[in-house]
Length: 265
Image (cartoon, rainbow, N blue to C red):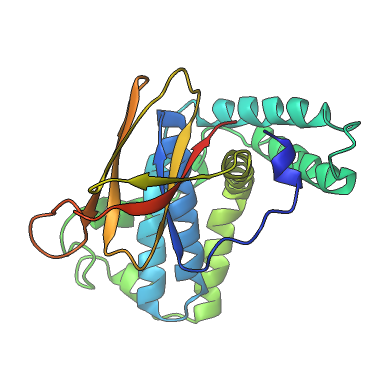
């Protein structure tokens, strides 16, 4: 399944929306971190104080998600496992060696960076009293008004480049984690090929039959006015396509085609 990661794939339709459903807690956390890091990057790139307010709140969410004491060890174990597996493909004629070497270098760099991190991920942020004072107030509705934290109000009005420098300082120690998460999820997504299936009356069920997967991806044309509700266990996968309109969700009565991918590392 790893060969497909190094083979050029046909571009997906531009109108295809993909929905991902993690099948274990480890992948769930990685998906949350990826989503939060992407949002943080978007907000930091902005120039308004409200952009950086949203960025700071997102940073606090990352701190909460990374609070798990075993996150570093899990990332290191998975990166090492992938490095060993991919290195074994070096002599395979169906693998593009330059691409493989590039991926192995990325894995090695992320592994070394995570291994060198002291303490838990994000511990350097918890040592900043100013940041933690804002974090404590952030959980209170409206708790970050200027009369609550005038120093924060001033920070939102300083030069935009100064704020971006602060974010760079806060984020730099966590960049190896971001890189490691990206590598693992990329391998997970591109290690399997999708299959085209059909849901009759908006419902689909498939027996797992011993399939070992960490994530399910459902691709649906955005012309369909519905979204997949996914549930799965070791016995069966169930997908219910419901209309994304205001009010009570209703199952799409029409039959529709969709992509299904069982993603596995």
